[in-house]
Image (cartoon, rainbow, N blue to C red; front, side, top):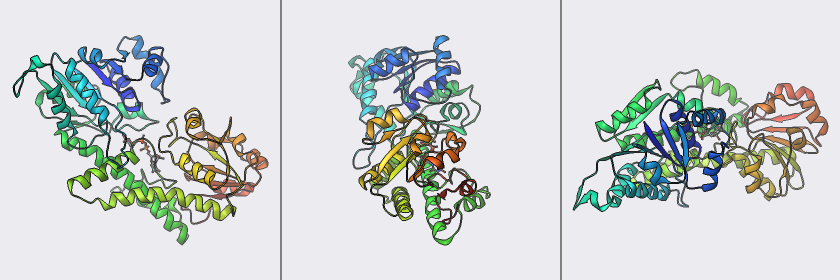
Length: 441
Ligand code: UDX
């Protein structure tokens, strides 16, 4: 099929490349000319494992191209996916200006049937609003009074991929959801996803939009729940790793997303939780549970800093080494990363901060001032009063901890992801603290 994807960020680019790789002809569109220039040269605007190779392969097979023009891409495609950003407004609402603008542009260039598919996370009812925007902006020849003379459909096909394993997730989803209002739209989406073998759930558009909201909010709830448990574990001498294992063995609960730490970040959970709280409020429901999920996530970072203060005595004038800046491993994304917030709190309290991340240093340099960026974990730990592990990159398991210990002013490690094995570090002379480990290693 001929497909256009509007928005070439994490979701759009991965979806575009993957759809091309399963046999479709895809045009990825973006309004950032620099990004399109880069993509045309074969350069990646983001780091995502496996994406570069797959993208080059698809371009070579002439299944994938890039364009700065929505009108041009839309005119060559029957199906147009919307994967543009839906950032949070100051009041938490999702800002849907990009979606509206794109819908308007698509409408103006329409001259045949199009299926417009939302991929970005959007509030329930956005599908209806897109439909209305398209009707209002269709060329005059396709409107006769209130009658629309050009057939089109709007559908929702929420994307559940995770950064860091995005290509794998897209190709091997637990389920694919089609929110559709017509058999024709369902048929087209079934055709597009035919090579992907998984459970397909067909609903109306509003339910598909809700599935995405509810799923992300539920996962965020799971994380905040275990973080709250971690706080109690620390106070009563229990170990949250054992607790999560014991809970997770119950198939109704499951072990996934029960990793306590410094809180969730990224481009989705914080924004989506905010948007869902607002959506609920507007619909007349006070989603107090979700508000607490958000509050626990914020407190978690403050609590971690207080733990450091308790163990280091004073934060002022201490030198602190940071291992990991990205909001999670295998990505260069630092949006809403706990590490960034924690560094800012430490700096405000007078600490000197050194940092290392395998992939996220370039982006971090633009948002962090006064941080010494280091070439490796060793340099980041050198002459430090403590090291904080804030992103669980595999690389940090394999460092030579004796070398790290010898170069530090005080051999103290705070593991904000419960990633390292404290039992191996203690005999080397480290003081080691995790999250919710009952004050023990
Ligand atoms: C998430 C959803 O998982 C995905 O389905 C949706 O499409 C987009 O949002 P993503 O933001 O890429 O994906 O990352 P994810 O792996 O879900 O992690 C989100 C955050 O939660 C990270 O900061 C991670 O460190 C944190 N997390 C995750 C925990 O703190 N504990 C956990 O147990 C799991």
